[in-house]
View 1 (spheres, helix red, strand yellow):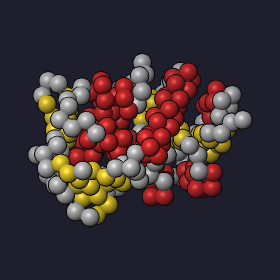
View 2 (cartoon, rainbow, N blue to C red):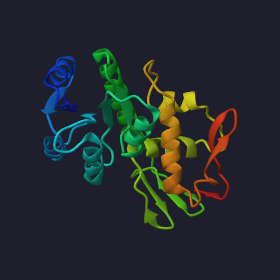
View 3 (spheres, one colour):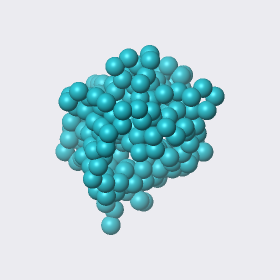
Length: 236
């Protein structure tokens, strides 16, 4: 029985059909051809993962992603785009996407990315079920049970990969991790990976949890090595 549902949002019928052929063997697949259909399907079907084309009629993928994040913060969203420039990737990730796949792509690559993200989602879910701990770092409070983050009592809107990154770092305070290590842990070992994704997510996370992102207190850069979470003022 196929339990996990994949929503494919693509206006090109050939690409949509090709992705469906590759994914339907292992997953329940639903299809949408424009932005409005995508938002409706995301609400009604509650998919486990969304493949979302950036260039769509009605509403483009960036707008669709932002709207979906208003009612579903946790579903992995993987952008599909013919635009591969660095700036386009950043815009996509900042809109709330978890990953960015450029066209033309190998369908096998897409399948590998889907599996990796679903695997990480399952692990994160198990971790949440098994853990009953709240961590307090000064004004920052992280509930590992509910996957929520508060600063000065106000809940912060972090996306799934941002929370996964944060929890991975805070549960191993002061330990330095390279970009490659963070990517392998959060996104899974994937030969198609783009390590720039880690930098973008770290930057986005700092804007949300730090009072001064330019001088981060919590997520610190260790030049030449990677990143660490400072445990100063740690209370558990």
